[in-house]
Image (cartoon, rainbow over all chains, first blue to last red; front, side):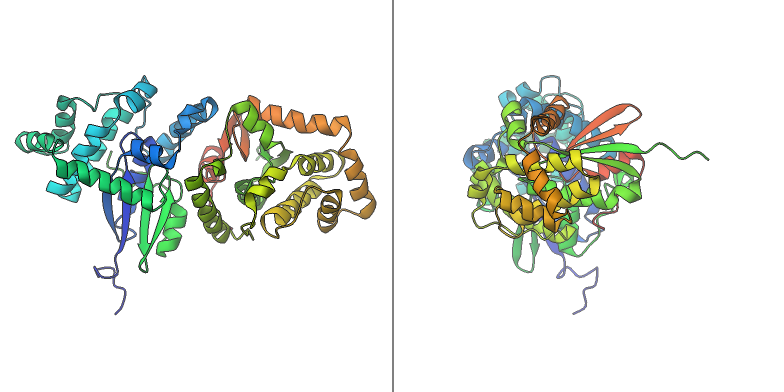
Length: 231
Length: 219
């Protein structure tokens, strides 16, 4: 069989494990969304829980080191304009990332991934990142989550149902299961990207290995393609 | 038309760091293309870690596994002959104080090309050929393979004990720290009287972007 670009059979699957608490995940997410068609990949969104990843891999966030934290702020600011992603640090980063956290947000994304389609997961993820990492808005309260969902085009009635779903055991279990899957592939942070080629899963960490991923896929990485931004 | 002033890029590194090797080979290849004045600044990563409160990523077992995977991928992609040392942790524990002093001596007494070649030979020993880089014999051999003549190589070995060489290493380390270093490589790009600090081997596209030049991946 020829490897026609239209063949579903030849399409390679890329799983993106992410948590909206992580700004580097946002960069990885937008870049993969921009390359999805160019590379003809089947991009699967896998919201997981970074708190558990850090705990079980015994890793600690880079921000826990003052020098690294300062550099990450600078690095994100550079990536902001280079990648055309409107990243802004929240006024109280530690409070937002480590006190308030993202468990309900990640459960909401999980519920959406179970009950709706990929497009909805993509759009709500983006709305949540815009709230936390651009507009300095809450993503823990029910109203915040509803606003993110409805901004992403989900009708209010449906959004309310999704919000009740975050307490359901199957949603909680799914989030756990995805987190465990990432851990079993060696995850220690976010984003964790699994590229499936020739029946093998190749794990990549971070948003800065796109040239290597392209190489593995037999495709080309041409930079951040700001013209394809959905922001 | 006037030729624009050459931009200075200071490259701080320690041969204990394999990511620094990847970055070193990249920046050496782009030096001519980008028209930069590349300055080699050997520093002591152990000192950087201590002062910044950072630690080697390889102390975390999940990260260590990934680093080995990542390094092998990068080496293939950038065509750097990296090979996993079988006793990596042991090698890391031996440290690079003498190697880094040796490179500093070369950077003070010889020309840039010698500093570049000796650094490369030391990376080759540690991260390609599974060889020692601590004894005088090892350093001597690295210098000889780098094209330094026998007498000069012997002299570099004695220079390592001189306080100006020791101070040179200290000064490079302190200069990096002052600019926010917490690991290796640390790259300082000077543009219009401002210095921009970059960490790691994966920010060349952004370095190119702020310099207004093009990064085209591995050459």
